Amino acid sequence: MTDDVTELPAEADPQITFADLGLDRKVLKAVEETGYTIPTPIQAGAIPPALERKDVLGIAQTGTGKTASFTLPMIHMLARGRARARMPRSLVLCPTRELAAQVAENFDTYAKHVKLTKALLIGGVSFKEQDALIDRGVDVLIATPGRLLDHFERGKLLLTGIEIMVVDEADRMLDMGFIPDIERIFGLTPFTRQTLFFSATMAPEIERITNTFLSAPAKIEVARAATTGENIEQGVVMFRAGRRDAEAKAKRDLLRALIDNEGEECKNAIIFCNRKVDVDVVAKSLKKHGYNAEPIHGDLDQSQRMRTLDGFRDGSVRFLCASDVAARGLDIPAVSHVFNFDVPSHAEDYVHRIGRTGRAGRKGKTIMICVPRDEKNLDAIEKLVQNQIPRLDTPMSPGAAPEAPAPEAATQTEEKKPRRRSRSRKTEPPAETTETKTAEVVEPKAAETVAVAAKPPAKPVPERQNARRGRDHKGGRDEKVIGLGDDTPGFLAKSFEERLTN
Image 1 (tube, rainbow, N blue to C red):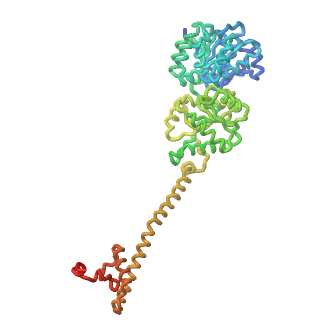
Image 2 (image 1 turned 60 degrees about the vertical axis):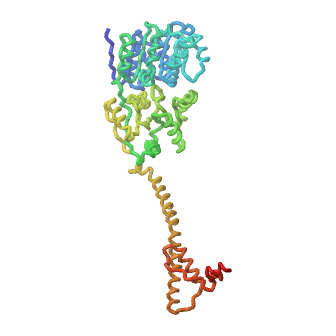
Image 3 (image 1 turned 180 degrees about the vertical axis):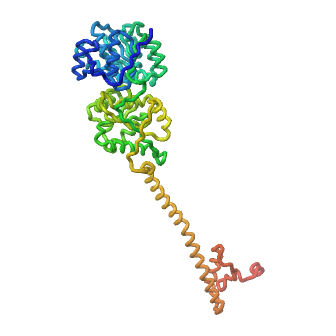
């Protein structure tokens, strides 16, 4: 049987409403209360075959409403029936805790008029609380792969009752190394299950899994894989620091200049870094300069991560400095800007990062900073999206970037000058001593010349002093010692024989 491939336009069809999709009236009531009336293209394409119990392969860029594409039909199909202890009826796998928590919130929103139970299995929460929920029986189990397998291996969970299985952000699962776990989980679920598979990109490994575990899926492709939203204005600043050791600081200066240059249009922003340590450094630097910023990455406690996300959603946090843990699937509709402090190492991550802005039909803007060593990654991104990212001028004054380390260079120059003066002072005293000694030696010579001309009586003391000076001063006058004069001791005046006799 061939795949049912449906390619949909990127724009929603205003003639189609949620009421036309065949959803239960209680589900429609919840949707209407949220203010949505027209489904997005991925929702309009995926919900009907899902309600027909077909496997679905949904490919769409982030921010197009994929979460509602599987939550709404799941609620409709699970409305009838009853869960049994330790045997959930449906399973939703998410790559990160934040995405899993967001899916759980969507279920609470759309299932408020339907009596369904759910459990959220993520790290950072005690097993005891999660075990209590599973023991009572849940209709919907939302989990990350690692924590799900932990419960299974502890004998607290059975997956033989799964009717519907959803894999969300499958390409992110691949990047995080979850594919072996996903394959194992597929093997623990019944062969007769219905599978809904969603992703923004389709890597070869993902395609292999879909061919193995999906049965004649309805393929819904809203836009070409790895495309970026047309309502997102993109740009990249090619940046070269004056000195390699000052590059990180210069990039942080440039980031603040880019934020300031956006002015009031930058209501809030997510700033992505490749490394967790850089997330902390950038957030600390922004706060130091008066910007309302907080970090979020995988090394933080789950409670702290959720508080930070809640603060960003309600506006109490303006700048969210994040690693790629926040790049996938987080639904924060009103993000005006995305700044890529680093060029992503994987080209697919660029699509997901910038997908945090321009959501739900809003306009968005994304700016990336590219240093020379990241130009290869930039080329890979442009090759993936099949489009060149516009180059932007730096908002810093001309030559400001190369001159960033100039104050340090000036300081070093000033520090070197005193050292040269210090060495000069060390060498000057010997020169002065030489001049003094030379003067002292020359004066006696002049005095001697006058004395010889006038033939005055010899003065023993000056002659002795001159003699000593002649011996002490190397390279000075070259004269012989004649005698001690009147100061000669008596025993020296006697001959050797006379001294022996006495």
